[in-house]
Image 1: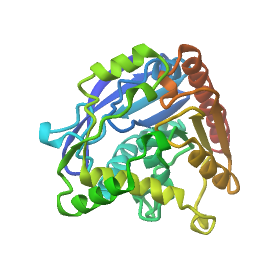
Image 2: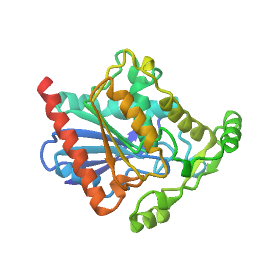
Image 3: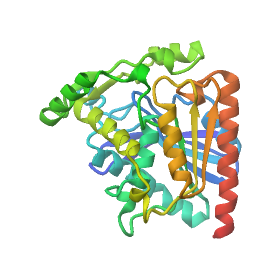
Length: 308
């Protein structure tokens, strides 16, 4: 396994930091990964090396406003609107898909937390660039990890705070707001919590517009109905969530997974005692989670290749 750093140019010309975890031989699958709020692509501990060692190449980038992808301190957390977020995702995926398809390598899409909500919106929302005729990158499946569909009550802001924030978002969408996370809810591993607190790239800074968009994407998913899913082409989906997550809502994820399972191939993996970031939880949990993710991808990759 080896790694390679680079850049990906977003639709407006912003250079995003990117990184690839390469397999030793020809990859059996490629995974495009989208991180969560106040996070970046280099904080997933053993997950990406484990996948790469299993024959799954991982490609990720620091999303707009996060990690190393911003022009200055004033742009930290400035993700842009939901349209910008989904267009950024689309540009990254369409930069990978032609190569993967030409080589006959199945391409999977994954997202954690905020990124998990983005992945579901990208595939399901009628306004997503993925749903435009002729623009779909060929995907073999989705991995949705502790997604931001709903917030757990322990992390949910007061209603009045959300309402006031939405007012500001309409007037000053780029205005920054510090949004500290309860880092003790991220992982049961104290070293992971200490790493997060010490990481200057996990800056906990959002913008009113970006935060409103993030919550709206979750609300749209919470309100999903069977009628809204009519005519949607379904991909295999693997949901993973720890049942002790106190950042995003485990019940909300389970409800959406059950709704989608009525339409297609959906697996819901529950991790007993697991906190928000399963790939960085206790060593035994993160090891099992990484194995489960690799096994699901490889099983679906074999099925996808059989259909080619």
